[in-house]
Amino acid sequence: DTGVSQDPRHKITKRGQNVTFRCDPISEHNRLYWYRQTLGQGPEFLTYFQNEAQLEKSRLLSDRFSAERPKGSFSTLEIQRTEQGDSAMYLCASNPLTGAPEQYFGPGTRLTVT
Amino acid sequence: GNSVTQMEGPVTLSEEAFLTINCTYTATGYPSLFWYVQYPGEGLQLLLKATKADDKGSNKGFEATYRKETTSFHLEKGSVQVSDSAVYFCALSLPIQGAQKLVFGQGTRLTINP
Image 1 (cartoon, rainbow over the protein chains, first blue to last red):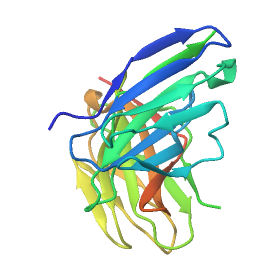
Image 2: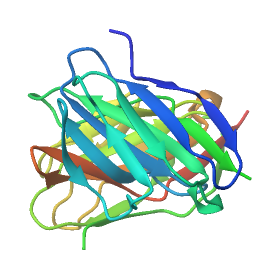
Image 3: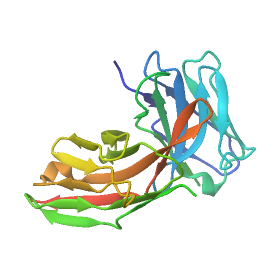
């Protein structure tokens, strides 16, 4: 099995621009999660997909954030009108529908908003 | 609410020293508990887990026991190596629609000196 992959690994953008990140989960993992990790903190849950359905969203996910998983495989996370407070590591994780509860994480996309 | 509190870091030890990183949690119900490790420039990797009270998780010489009476899941290793230098995160699982999300502590940075 290849692991969870994320693209890009790093993104620098100017305030007000839109950015989009991609996550490819482990193949055949039905469940996909997005987390955000700010410097010196643990990851915080943003949203969850089961196949193509977005079943849970955190209050952290403001209206400027949107996530999709159109065919139940890869997922994208878009941030519109970026703000400096959006600077963080965005992590994607996946796990199968049945089995143990642990999640498998990708390497993350580090976003810097200048 | 549901939360995880970890021992404040950073922690610096000499090679072959004994390691303890404290973790306590607050949760309703009976969550699964995890330790994840993050090496520089990499994503989070599952180190070990325990899914019910009195379970002991172990991996790569690390151990942690799920103690319901003290709501703790302390990480221990008898003899650390330089290669154990990383950030360690304690986490618990919380049910969400159709899955479980992870709630993380703030992380403990560990540095092992030769």
